[in-house]
Length: 244
Ligand code: URA
Image (cartoon, rainbow, N blue to C red):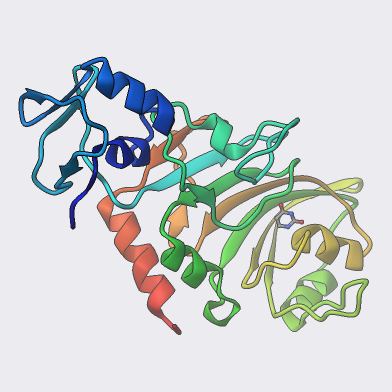
């Protein structure tokens, strides 16, 4: 990587705001290769310089890949004045360029992929790529074999749009309620809820289980997150490249 300003390096790594960082640099809190540096505009080499901020080694990582178990009640957005967003759930150093890949409704839970890698996000979301998204769903009323077939053929939504073929797998059928898994290969607004509306059912609980090869880690609690493994990142990249 080419040289960059020391204050930008630290801001990119999310240790604070640019103005906070400038002040801390002037206060002598930053060391580059064992030397106290008081000039925020100093050029550093992200790949080789050793940079400490407040006695903590700050390594430069260009790309971040995070999976979050989104709880209900938070928005899939970067910022909101009133309602907490998924980025507010990231507790550690938080860089400014992260964003959620695709949206889950405020009341939907489950897997949300967060990154600053715009190219990968674009590839994963590209309609050409038909990346599979699997959801666990609870609906009012029972589900039928006929509905499985309708999901398979494509459903006409209330605005006339006909969905791509999808898979409905019934897990538990009761008279007044059912549990199922649904896999879709596109991502229209409120898609799952609208698909069930099209067959006369309403969704009472929705959770995303996977997105392409990325599966929600069962060790995560609601609201928790972790960084993706190298393998998970590689698999997503492979998937993104399919039709691009
Ligand atoms: N489909 C929906 O209806 N809502 C979501 O949050 C995701 C898919």
